[in-house]
Length: 193
Image (cartoon, rainbow, N blue to C red; front, top):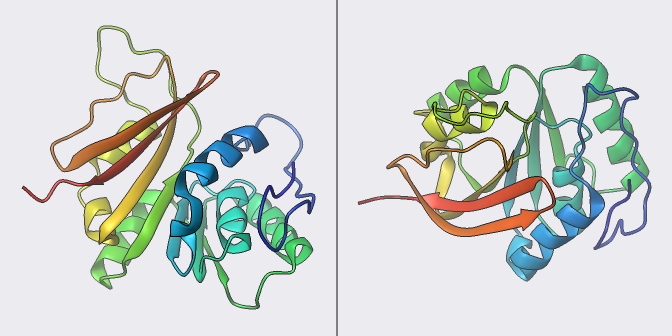
């Protein structure tokens, strides 16, 4: 895996061995960031289910001011720290929160934190034909705290697998659906109506 664009372009980042982490592939990250273009510059990022930290690192490489990366596993958090060092990004631009994503969201909401982009490519859910999804992606869409963490014109960029049919709840409006192989990425804004 490598950083695709910006100041750290070409830097190799590592993922833990095994199937515990499913990093967002280079070509998918490239498509996401091609879509975002220069709008990423000067922004505050929240990455959920960090894994390798690739979405945070790519954002910072392309000019985001700061990124908060939430990852439950201490082992995976060490990989994120090592990857940040390899990328040579400004000191303090990446903050790492080792916690359950949903606990972290509630805590951030209490302190009224806000982010311009919230990015999440969580572990894929099961196929859910004929029933409502129980995946982490659906749980994010259902989470009562998540919309309050998004700045007024901010976007939630949410990944999931094609076999996991999500219910986009009333608190969100979808701007774009991007398809890449078995992965789907939804670009969503807050529905203030």
